[in-house]
Length: 219
Ligand code: AMP
Image (cartoon, rainbow, N blue to C red; front, side, top):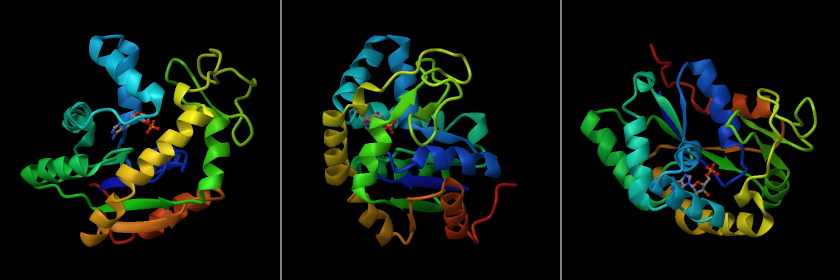
């Protein structure tokens, strides 16, 4: 099963992609995670990506497309994947279509996370992440066991640079301008399935599973 999760920053795409990915036995492919790991490597490319991310801006299409298409060739993607945070622009969507068409493996569905924008700000400003990439927590909705420290490696949790309020507003604007039009792109292809992304995490997973009824599980 090959899926795209489409939604604004903070709509819970990552959380849901991990849950569904585990139950379906397919990986979550997050371009944000891939880019942060490239940035941590400290190479010239990594530093370039970091500048865009810290500013809340989109990383150039060619860099993101190359990264994700390479990741999709790994063995764990044989039975499918969930794209989380990709595509984010029309150029990316078209590149994805072209790459999948060449391999004769179309996207099965695009899950559109619909959410009230006011909820997003509270979710994002309260988010804290492990600097070593072990995951993320929320000061109110999902605190770590020892407040402020990673449950896995006990490092001090940090706030992502782009989770500052001014940067969040830039990211929302980027979403509205560049990514939201993709809803129409996928609706025209009869691939779009909209879910309501507020409330209980397990209930949202159930909505996604219901939206995917009829799509075969990977063998
Ligand atoms: P995320 O973790 O999905 O919130 O992404 C964090 C940041 O990584 C974004 O604000 C962008 O700067 C960058 N990014 C992630 N995915 C993409 C993408 N598909 N295209 C361009 N930039 C991206």
